[in-house]
Length: 158
Figure 1 (tube, rainbow, N blue to C red):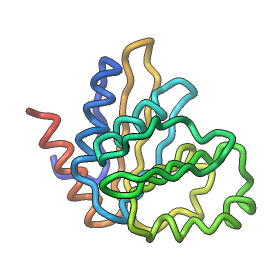
Figure 2 (cartoon, rainbow, N blue to C red):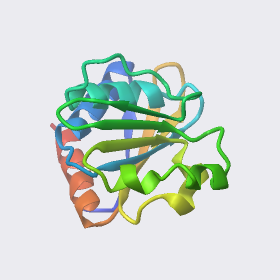
Figure 3 (cartoon, helix red, strand yellow):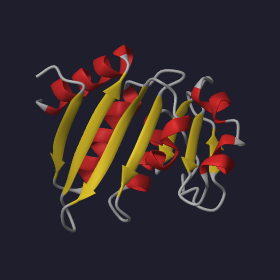
């Protein structure tokens, strides 16, 4: 099952947190995650768990109105929410400094700025099924992200 696309059913908030924590444990400087999904699907929950896994001690909250929040951990954590931005406004933020920097970047609503995303990243879309269940759709862009996706697949089988 070595594919650049994969999906995983999630049955609880805790499973979302475990998945994010696992991805966080595999992080490297420059990791970029494009995070999309319905309102209430768990994007911020995912981001909080990933941040904790890379050693962020601060409370991570949704950057809805601040656009970008930066946190210190074992790796810097850059949490973005581009929902309210036009493509032109997002382009003026200097996103490449984050994407190609020394931290881990999570971009909520990344599909809205698809043209500005780097060539290589992991796309995660959280699909709301019901109050507890989600379907997590993942797609890897780039060799290192394909390897990460394979690690996630192997981990989920344990």
